[in-house]
Image 1 (cartoon, rainbow, N blue to C red):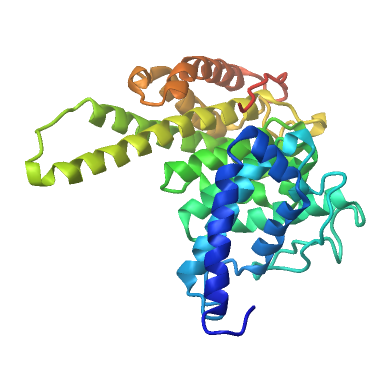
Image 2: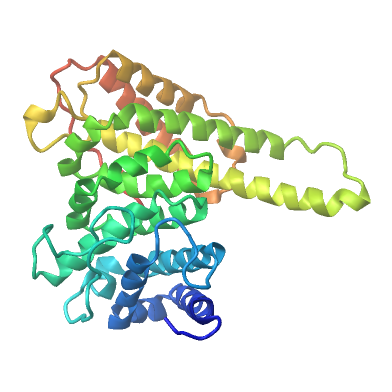
Length: 362
């Protein structure tokens, strides 16, 4: 940090602008792939590890400045981790990538480097992956809803990689993602479901998700998000009185915000229902785990939770009025599959195990 009058604040302001530019550039496929492969992009990992988990005064930089820096860094990480599947991400220590790893913690209590234990010391890929997963898992608890959503989106990208899914379970990120399903923001719920759908598609994660009561929690989230989507669809069709001229701008702004919230709730409901389908249709690798896992062996409270969610999905009458075109098109198929799986689960013998039915995140 510089020693002059506005050192930290001035540096933070420059970093915010640069990182915001990087995040925007990364939205282009060619540019994003090139930035993700550049060794310098790993500096985002080091920056996140250096910032306090909860924004506070750093030098002369006020908490709001630090929070904005965190948010922009998380946004850039989200955009860059979109390119992880190709194996060319410097953030995850792709072959040929260089740069030092962050060591220790950033105040959240979870180690983010490989020193002192963890996965595969000396393996750059494994170390970078664990460090990034640890930082993002911490960020899920950020007091700013937008920051938590960005962290969940990035984990949704990373969890497309099989090794990362196990790492996330080891770091308890799966539990944090399930807690976020109760968040009042549909945006946060949608982002959380984007990661959970990938975890629930991996048989190796099912026993862990079962121990966290994932089925009733995802079923409850599906019901709540359907209610929110319904409320938005009904309000959208209400029309109502025309606002007076001096309040028209405020009414239009509020209407636009409500429409955006409704579209988020619709997309989140679809992802939550897909996640529930994955949990119901997948079978743990170890057949002995079936009773505790997410197969057909559901006890009575779980059966009721699943059947309630399936009944709501089947009875959904307002999906045709949803604003989000993709959600509107997907919902009938997802609802039909959920109804089918719930019916089978509710009537299957306790010891039965179901075969996997693929419901992937797109």
